[in-house]
Every structure is written in C-alpha cells, then in structure tokens.
Length: 423
Image (cartoon, rainbow, N blue to C red; front, side):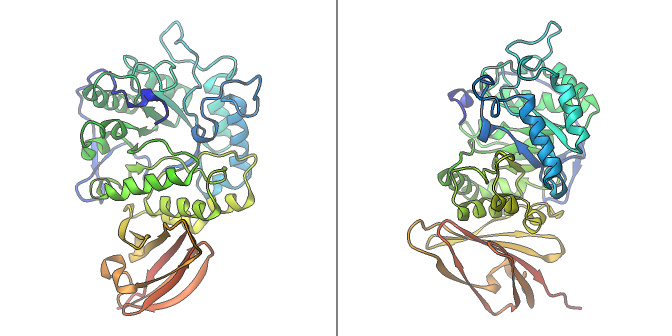
C-alpha cells in the first residue's frame, strides 16, 4: 500500500442511475459501454519511479512537474514507444494545488505546472499521445491533496474540458465500502456524461478485498480496468507477490477480464534498479499472459537499450494485445516451476514457464505437449516459437511429443504455439 491511508474505506455520494451496457465475448461478463480499452491500455505512469517528489528546487529533473511529462512525451514520440502501442502518458498523485479554485474546480500546482493541464494535454496530443490524470474517490488523495468526494460531476467536466483521456481513480480517505462503491459508480457515469472518451482506471476491488469479495460483474459495468492488489515495488518479491495473488484468486478474477475491462496488476518496473534481467523478462512475459495494462514506470531518459528492447518486443506485445481478449491463468505448479497459458486468436496459445527457484543454475524442464491448451493447442500438431528470452523457432511438435527447455532462476521461457490447421 502506498500510504497507511490507502486502506481506509471511502466516503462518497450515492448515484442511482442506469448505464448502457454491452455484452462482449466473455462468458457472463458485461463491459463498460464507452468503446475504450478493447485491448489492455499501454503507456507510462509516473508513480513507482518518481512517487510524490515535489521538490523541484533540489531535484528539478525528477520532481512531479510539467517539465517531466513533456520530456517523457518527447521520448515516447521519438524513441519508438508510440509506434509499438505505448500511447497513454499518465500523471499519478501529487500534481494538484492544495486547494480547489474559487469555482470549486481542481487545479494544478501553479509552480510545478505553470502552464496548466489543458496546455500540457495539448502538448501531449501534438505528439500523437494521450494524457492520463489521477484523482481520488474520497475526501483526499492518498498523498493528501483534494479528493473528488462531493465533486464527481465538476471534476469529470474539468478533466473533459482539459482534454484528459484517462482517469486513474484511487480510493483513499473514505468512510465505508458502500460509499466507496457508490463513488466509483458516480464518477463512471459522470465521465460518460461529458461525452469525451476517457478510459476509467479504478482501484475499487483493491479497497473491497479487506472487507469482502468484490462483485466483478458490477465492477466491469463501470470500469475499464481495475487494481486488485497493492502497489508494485521495484523488487522481485513484489512482482512475485502479485503473481501469487493472481494465481490464488484466478477462479474469481480471470473470467472478469475481456475487451473493455481488464485486471490491472500494476506498473511495469522494467528498466529500473530492483529486478535482475531474468526477473524483468518474467514480468514482461507474465503481464502479457495476464492481459494486463502495460503501464511502464521508469525513466525513459536513462533506460538501457536492453530494457527498451524488451519493453518494445512486438511479439510479446502482440500476445498482450491479442484481440480475443482472454486472460491467461496458472495451469500447474510443480517443484518450483509454474506453467501459465493463455488462449489467443486463430486457435494459438501462449505458454510461460517460470522457474521460481532462487538458488542454483538453470533448470531443465520437460512437459507433455498434450497437456497444453486444454489438450487441443497442438492436436494434431503445432509450430512452437520461443519468444523470450531469445526468439527461436523450435519447430513442429506433434500432440504426443514432449518439449524440453532450460529456465534460469527467477526467469521465464515464453512460447507461442500455432496450431496446424487441418481440413
């Protein structure tokens, strides 16, 4: 959790309204009808790397300011990020002034954002990108800035007037889980009412889990993606804990995901300090398997070529963005090896094998081809390509054959299985 206040339930206004829903090809799952996030959102979000650094005098290059976001926009435009799908440049907490203006509207800190959010949005849009912003369902944001409780409609209108394209809506400083839910619903309706296309990123289930199991059918009706678990940190323990939570709760959360609404395991921390190279491969591969939003939190001004190449891997991004929109799941775990799989378009499958052992060297692992893809991925045969760590065509495998590989400690081998079509 970001702050101790993150666990406080919210206090919000009840909004009893009906909203239009549309049924997607996901069993029993209704999606928010705003036509957005038909594949997982891709972009950049400041929080994990830059947090709530507001000291622009001492740290002018890493404080939360319009300068930081303009520099990131320039790089997303010029360094190939936009071309592979990273299009949302997102502001997290600590962008606001301490008080609303005389008309009750949120306003940016005048020192750190002297041009205002409207001009920043124009700049981001001029680069062919979209701008995301942060607010909170409760009385204050997690860092103590003005919350949206009692101001949902005016805040939604303000964001639309500024040209915002995504809202990350946090859940601090509220009074009850009932009011939390009402607040998230109210803001969803308020955003749709503006007429502007604004992706709605919720943290609703994250704040519900300590009290009771969230209603994902309801959450999907109002949100484009939603956080389930605490903030990611720049560490292997953090990434592993997210994967553990997801697999432990996959019977509940996997079926909720699909075009228009996604489970969000939080930011990619690839290119920072805490993960080894193999662990960075694991995060990229598993976020693709989980159909997760790919929101980087790193410094694009100083990212290594190796990390950049991984984050821009078109084959892995294609798995993440697969239009079938089915989230993958943990198939089995044996002797500290996890096998995850995800169904893809055109009867293809993605398979990730993760070595969780943190001692020793690379481990050999053999699996029966017939056990993958619910028994049909390679029936009667399939072409298998290793995508990570190194792209390698492994060849044709029959349904009755076995595949042998070696996996580095805390590393992952990511495969794509393409079925041989028979007529």
